[in-house]
Length: 151
Ligand SMILES: [Zn+2]
Image (cartoon, rainbow, N blue to C red; front, side, top):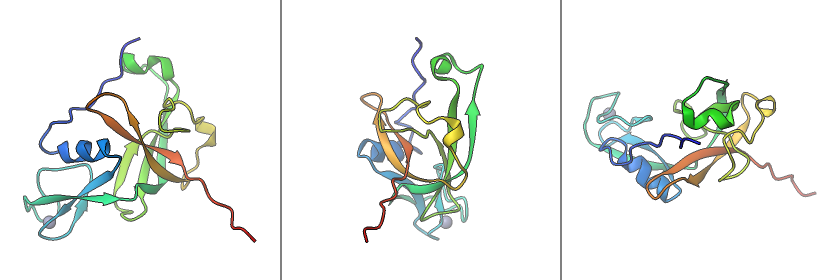
């Protein structure tokens, strides 16, 4: 089985994201000049072009804004897990920011662990993290567990 491709974690524009993920934190960029928040990372603010960008932590909670299902053909590293869903998460605190990722039943569960038939637009999700190598910890999402109110 061919390994799944992994992201570069030392790119100057994305290093802060991967460093935070290794600490099990989901971060996005915020412009130090105008406060604009953005994801995916850019080397400058997409709103005002200021170059001073800082990383801010999010709760990682959100809702499924959209999703698709990969069937194939895929990259060789994904052949054994098709079909698998890919979701687009709208963050609770930043509804204008959407992040593509995997929906899974547990932090280390395979990316095909949630059947596409169980996925609904608007489904609440929370971030979790899978350690996949020494350098790479991947944010992914799990359906949010809603606590029943006690009478
Ligand atoms: Zn800005």
